[in-house]
Image: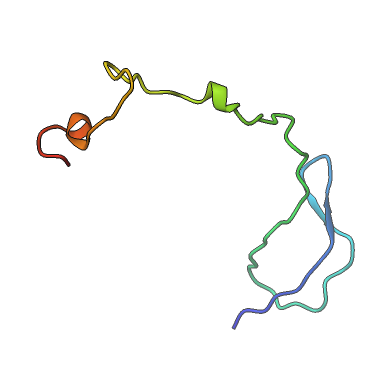
Length: 78
């Protein structure tokens, strides 16, 4: 059966983990750690593209008027 406890720790300059509070009596053996830490916000802020900058398709010979399905998809209309 697995159990979980929450401990406060600090990572020092040598990348060692220092526990702030001694853990309660734990049995000897291997443990699995999940580290939660704050990450600095990324400075790479992407701006949304203006609709004028969206990619466009070349309409080819279409110059307006009506456009039938067969003209788009060929003779089978699919």
